[in-house]
Amino acid sequence: MAQLTIQHLGRLTRIIAHGGDAQFKKLRNALLLKNFVVAAEHENRLELHRRAYLLQDDWPIQVSIRRSGSEFEIDYYLSIPWGWIAGLTFLTWVALPFAGFQNAGLAFVLALLVAALAIYKQKFDCRPDASFWQQRPRQRWGEMMERLVREAFDRS
Image (cartoon, rainbow, N blue to C red; front, side, top):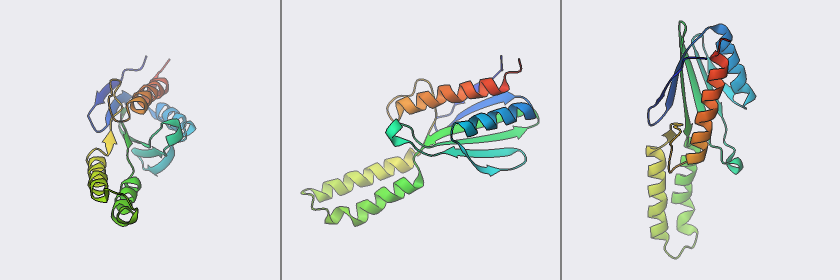
């Protein structure tokens, strides 16, 4: 059984595992099979992301793998993309004043509060006891990432 250290740091979840090239390739291939796309790849660092599938209650997820010798530091988190935040802000400033709402001022203030909250809480860890915002996807991805890492780094 693979020895993993899992930390939920509020804005991201970090797993520390020990292994070699074979385990790294197994994890990389497992993530690619889950529809992740390689964003950047360097000698000791790999960045992957997965787009949102909102109709399946699935938000974008980012994964960063850093290697230092035989130690792997795997960070992952669900996020609200900057494009969504910019789109909401743009619609708030441009479209909302002309939408014909009876209380356009109140709607404008609420939309700005939502945009500010999205900017403040843009990243979410994947803790098993997640509550409120994106509870099910965070729990589901936490379990899935832990399983993928355990399978990849299991030496039996």
